[in-house]
Amino acid sequence: MKKILIAIDNSPASKKILSAGASLAKKYKSKATIVAVAPTSFEGDLNENEAKLLKDAVIIRTRVILEDAAVMFKRVKLKINTVLREGDPAAEILLLAKEIKPDIIIVGSTGKGKIKRFFLGSVSRKIVELAKFSVLVVK
View 1 (cartoon, rainbow, N blue to C red):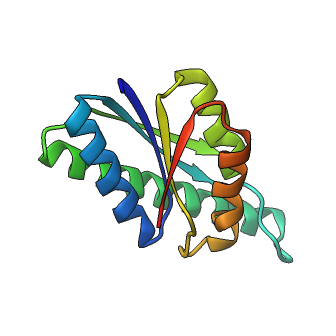
View 2 (view 1 turned 120 degrees about the horizontal axis):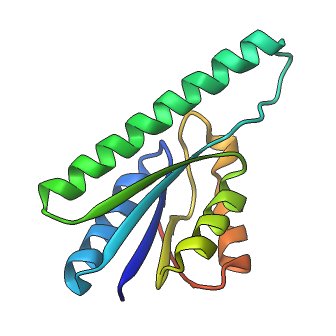
Protein backbone atom coordinates (compact mmCIF):
# COMPACT_ATOMS: atom_id res chain seq x y z
CA MET A 1 0.00 0.00 0.00
CA LYS A 2 1.97 2.96 -1.31
CA LYS A 3 -0.65 5.74 -1.52
CA ILE A 4 -3.49 6.60 0.85
CA LEU A 5 -6.14 9.27 0.25
CA ILE A 6 -7.73 10.55 3.46
CA ALA A 7 -10.90 12.65 3.12
CA ILE A 8 -11.81 14.85 6.08
CA ASP A 9 -14.23 17.61 6.99
CA ASN A 10 -14.93 19.64 10.12
CA SER A 11 -16.44 16.81 12.14
CA PRO A 12 -15.46 14.79 15.21
CA ALA A 13 -15.23 11.76 12.90
CA SER A 14 -12.29 13.40 11.11
CA LYS A 15 -10.00 12.66 14.07
CA LYS A 16 -10.81 8.96 13.75
CA ILE A 17 -10.31 9.12 9.98
CA LEU A 18 -6.91 10.78 10.45
CA SER A 19 -5.94 8.25 13.11
CA ALA A 20 -6.83 5.34 10.80
CA GLY A 21 -4.92 6.99 7.96
CA ALA A 22 -1.87 7.62 10.14
CA SER A 23 -1.87 4.02 11.36
CA LEU A 24 -1.98 2.65 7.82
CA ALA A 25 0.61 5.12 6.55
CA LYS A 26 2.98 4.21 9.36
CA LYS A 27 2.44 0.45 9.03
CA TYR A 28 2.95 0.39 5.25
CA LYS A 29 5.30 3.39 4.95
CA SER A 30 2.75 4.93 2.60
CA LYS A 31 2.53 8.42 1.18
CA ALA A 32 -0.66 9.98 2.51
CA THR A 33 -2.71 12.72 0.91
CA ILE A 34 -5.32 14.48 3.02
CA VAL A 35 -8.12 16.20 1.17
CA ALA A 36 -10.79 18.56 2.47
CA VAL A 37 -13.45 20.00 0.20
CA ALA A 38 -14.94 23.45 0.68
CA PRO A 39 -18.48 23.50 -0.73
CA THR A 40 -19.16 26.38 -3.09
CA SER A 41 -22.94 26.37 -3.25
CA PHE A 42 -25.15 27.24 -0.33
CA GLU A 43 -28.87 27.05 0.32
CA GLY A 44 -30.77 30.08 1.46
CA ASP A 45 -31.50 33.62 0.44
CA LEU A 46 -28.02 35.06 0.12
CA ASN A 47 -27.15 37.99 -2.05
CA GLU A 48 -23.97 37.83 -4.13
CA ASN A 49 -21.84 39.59 -1.50
CA GLU A 50 -23.11 37.39 1.35
CA ALA A 51 -22.49 34.25 -0.72
CA LYS A 52 -18.92 35.37 -1.45
CA LEU A 53 -18.25 36.13 2.22
CA LEU A 54 -19.62 32.74 3.25
CA LYS A 55 -17.60 30.95 0.57
CA ASP A 56 -14.41 32.76 1.65
CA ALA A 57 -15.06 31.85 5.31
CA VAL A 58 -15.63 28.19 4.42
CA ILE A 59 -12.41 28.08 2.39
CA ILE A 60 -10.43 29.63 5.26
CA ARG A 61 -11.93 27.14 7.74
CA THR A 62 -11.16 24.24 5.40
CA ARG A 63 -7.55 25.42 5.07
CA VAL A 64 -7.24 25.47 8.88
CA ILE A 65 -8.64 21.92 9.08
CA LEU A 66 -5.97 20.75 6.62
CA GLU A 67 -3.19 22.59 8.46
CA ASP A 68 -4.22 20.96 11.75
CA ALA A 69 -4.25 17.53 10.08
CA ALA A 70 -0.78 18.10 8.62
CA VAL A 71 0.57 19.02 12.06
CA MET A 72 -0.79 15.76 13.48
CA PHE A 73 0.97 13.73 10.78
CA LYS A 74 4.23 15.64 11.11
CA ARG A 75 4.23 15.06 14.88
CA VAL A 76 4.40 11.31 14.25
CA LYS A 77 6.97 11.86 11.48
CA LEU A 78 4.78 10.85 8.55
CA LYS A 79 5.04 12.39 5.09
CA ILE A 80 1.86 14.16 4.11
CA ASN A 81 0.44 16.09 1.22
CA THR A 82 -2.65 18.26 1.75
CA VAL A 83 -5.15 19.23 -0.91
CA LEU A 84 -7.94 21.78 -0.63
CA ARG A 85 -10.66 21.45 -3.24
CA GLU A 86 -13.79 23.50 -3.82
CA GLY A 87 -17.14 22.13 -4.96
CA ASP A 88 -19.16 18.99 -4.37
CA PRO A 89 -17.28 16.88 -1.79
CA ALA A 90 -17.94 13.44 -3.30
CA ALA A 91 -17.19 14.59 -6.84
CA GLU A 92 -13.97 16.35 -5.84
CA ILE A 93 -12.72 13.43 -3.74
CA LEU A 94 -13.41 11.03 -6.61
CA LEU A 95 -11.68 13.36 -9.07
CA LEU A 96 -8.60 13.60 -6.85
CA ALA A 97 -8.58 9.81 -6.43
CA LYS A 98 -8.60 9.44 -10.21
CA GLU A 99 -5.63 11.83 -10.41
CA ILE A 100 -3.42 10.29 -7.70
CA LYS A 101 -4.58 6.65 -7.94
CA PRO A 102 -4.45 5.72 -4.24
CA ASP A 103 -4.43 2.14 -3.02
CA ILE A 104 -7.18 3.09 -0.59
CA ILE A 105 -9.50 6.02 0.16
CA ILE A 106 -10.42 6.62 3.80
CA VAL A 107 -13.70 8.43 4.53
CA GLY A 108 -16.07 8.81 7.47
CA SER A 109 -19.55 7.36 7.62
CA THR A 110 -21.20 10.58 8.74
CA GLY A 111 -20.10 14.16 9.10
CA LYS A 112 -21.50 16.42 11.74
CA GLY A 113 -19.51 19.58 11.13
CA LYS A 114 -20.84 23.08 10.71
CA ILE A 115 -21.34 22.42 7.02
CA LYS A 116 -22.88 19.01 7.70
CA ARG A 117 -25.37 19.00 4.86
CA PHE A 118 -22.43 18.65 2.47
CA PHE A 119 -20.66 15.78 4.20
CA LEU A 120 -23.30 13.43 5.54
CA GLY A 121 -23.46 9.74 4.76
CA SER A 122 -24.37 10.55 1.17
CA VAL A 123 -20.78 11.60 0.46
CA SER A 124 -19.21 8.38 1.72
CA ARG A 125 -21.97 6.38 0.04
CA LYS A 126 -21.23 8.01 -3.34
CA ILE A 127 -17.53 7.40 -2.90
CA VAL A 128 -18.05 3.73 -2.02
CA GLU A 129 -20.36 3.26 -5.01
CA LEU A 130 -18.33 5.17 -7.61
CA ALA A 131 -14.67 4.84 -6.60
CA LYS A 132 -12.41 2.66 -8.70
CA PHE A 133 -10.26 2.10 -5.61
CA SER A 134 -10.76 0.36 -2.26
CA VAL A 135 -12.58 2.48 0.32
CA LEU A 136 -12.31 2.25 4.10
CA VAL A 137 -15.27 3.81 5.90
CA VAL A 138 -14.47 4.86 9.48
CA LYS A 139 -17.28 5.19 12.02
